[in-house]
Length: 508
Image (tube, rainbow, N blue to C red; front, side, top):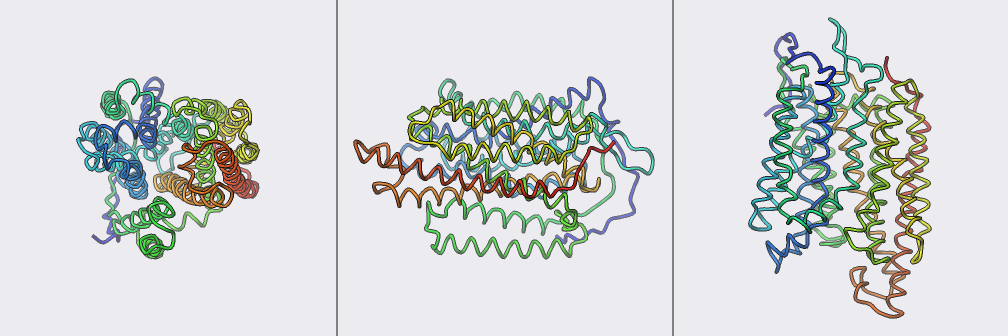
């Protein structure tokens, strides 16, 4: 289908009611927060439950399919992101929100009913298509819930002191930290299928309440969706994510498979950019990148994705491999980070609503996150565990300021008619940053360990004894410190960009 818009004469924009106020607004915001938690928890909750899943569904060959089990959700969610943004701007965010939630719940039910690894992987992809929309569309809904109804001929503006959009980003970050712990707890005490079944009663209640309570504008102007552009974006992100998943692990970096995927990603990106430059209604308008705040916001969010991957994943690996902490107990180390993200994020949001500059918190957030990552570069085989907890708390304080304020910054800067694509755009850049960070840091860890270790890979450490084990642990710590140093470099680059941001304040 052609993506060229042939919009008919614009009709009067309808609404399904005025933006919710009072108790209705509180209920609607609570529904959004629960929805974001569902989606973000499911994006990484499976990682700590892979052993019981494999033992139940495919004890012989299931281990080989674990990477697909984890990647299926992320691939589907990322590929669908750009299309969700355009659908919000075209159809209205409430309809898209309900559709994404229904898709997510369908995928959750199918995951719980799966009888083989193949069925579970396919169901995770369905769940990811819905989950990707929830993590971005819900932030659009939150923004519109905090938007005053416009006067005739005017655009909607955020109410002073009522900026709910940043809450979504903060809760999403906290959910990322708590997901692995929750997955392990459910798998240990209720069975792995309840990781998915628990979504159903909560999600169905949210779905029914959203239909009744959430009142948002409804678009009635006809548009054609740029499905070609959406397909090219999906092809690019899927190829890129597969490179990061397979490169250096399943296939060598110079293998025909990885090189072919890299070439395919480059070609798809080139075609996508050309399409966005020529389509009448592109799904990610290049005009957004002419706005300085938008460019820097996207770039900083991408660097945050890189750094968060370097912190969360490799701190967990350090605790389990070097310090012998059990997987479930290691997840509890992320609680200080989640607390820091939530408390400081909410506080900074209130201060911005009171008139403080958003730039202040973006700069402060990058400084705190850089300091935390720099502290992690000092880890050794006998570093005190409270030092690790302190670094994660400081990291939460930094990321809590960044994630919420960057989303608000982009939403403030975007033209009102492009709120959806701007919001999904910043999520898209964070996701790509996370994927690239996983690939680069994984390759870096392996190379440094191979150069300094006793031979073999990091997977062999658990089987070593005596001096060989001591050497392996020292080599692993050295390798992890190099990863944290690179993550620190990414955040310092984000700090440089943050300093260059123009001073920003909330719109009155």
